[in-house]
Length: 223
Image 1 (cartoon, helix red, strand yellow):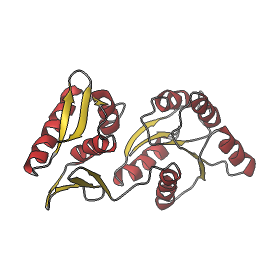
Image 2 (spheres, helix red, strand yellow):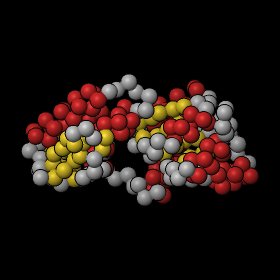
Image 3 (cartoon, helix red, strand yellow):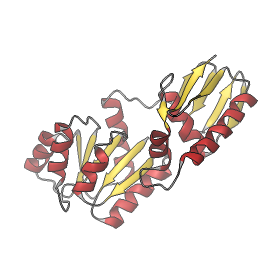
């Protein structure tokens, strides 16, 4: 799951990012409202964690502008402003949830799980396509009684493809989802990990294959 953190307190942003990364979230972070809006408009994120007091644009403005532009990504307001009028303003601006500082890691993770359930993006233990099953906790890929453990990048890449089964996923989207928007990863990185995954699918004698759509991207298909 890809999360954008928009927080001007760099130490807090890094602490939140570490919590999420330790729980297998992919994280990008920016430190002002204008950058938060630019990143949020990409539509690649599953959740945006948005502070209220930000330079350039405050969180309320960012939320309103994202909603005005049709971005439906769930927004979690994370702020020290705990007064009821502030919460009402945040929710009326387009936020889906509101959490005040300080907070515990368990509380943050619970709010994120609740947001995914609320938007219908229920996080299951396994993803299944055709005869393959991907365990989202252990990162094991299995087929017909055989299983193999995937590296984190292999797992993240296959998760995106399985979630978008039978749909073409561009290399740019895969880089953003797996390596992050600010990553220096290039097409060759994607191609290398696609090759690793194809070898593992072949090892498992899976009927599911990764199809190359020349000049566009990749698609997971069943044979």
